[in-house]
Image 1 (spheres, rainbow, N blue to C red):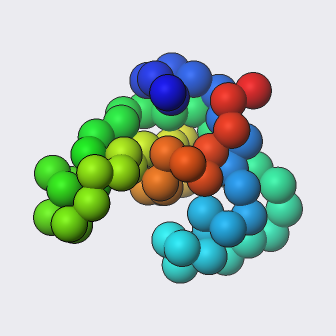
Image 2: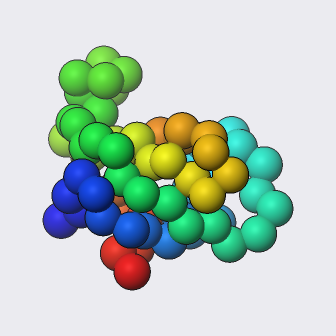
Length: 69
């Protein structure tokens, strides 16, 4: 389970799901983690994580697309 403050590697597929451009392998710090049902009203029990990337962007990814460093 990923927690707030964890340093993570963001997998390439995460960028495709989120609709972000993938330039190179990225890392970031998890700012928050919440159920997708609460954030986006999706019919799933998956967790969504807000990640502050090294470029300074805040992006939202599925937890399963992140690897803890």
